[in-house]
Image (cartoon, rainbow, N blue to C red; front, top):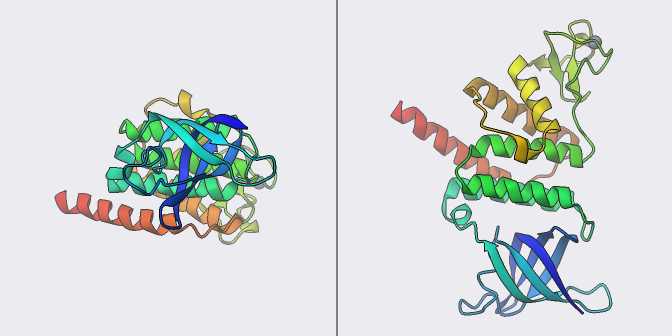
Length: 257
Ligand SMILES: [Zn+2]
């Protein structure tokens, strides 16, 4: 049986001499691995469509059982070439693709996630703020993983009002009276929790341009990474790469200043 999916390549690994196993995140079917026979050969008609981050229509032959579908044809909608050529963009895209891969099961449709991935890659490709896009993506992944932090009021007593601290282990804001319940809770900038609340809540496509100060960016990154490490330790290989790239970029900017 032939099926046609709209998908984005989130992983592509060599298989044997000439083939590739391509993991697609599809709009209709969720995550699915497909066999792309001969795709390693540069002149194969499957070579371009099986490249990482490519968005397109994928025509696949499915057997009757649970075996891996075979990719027979692909039509590229967006090649997102810059995401493979600019190292910084590659680092961000690879990190987000790996995170999505690790947090999803095969063949569980989630059109919302497809939209999120598509818009994120599209905005990255358009040159929008990669760091902020990555933070939004991470925030949405917390919701997906069922570990959404509580940033509406104190997680312990429900009180509203500054100043807050943030508790990684309890998973949210603590008011002044409750901050002692976690000796490791740390002061959180108002801009940080307000942005995080926005990121958790808003559809990505409705977010406009946002100006974010360096101090807020740094705290958001630290908070989200510590939060992810505490609650779902994914050990993403791509995160080391991203962190190396970020250090390079930041030290580069520092030299120029
Ligand atoms: Zn409280």
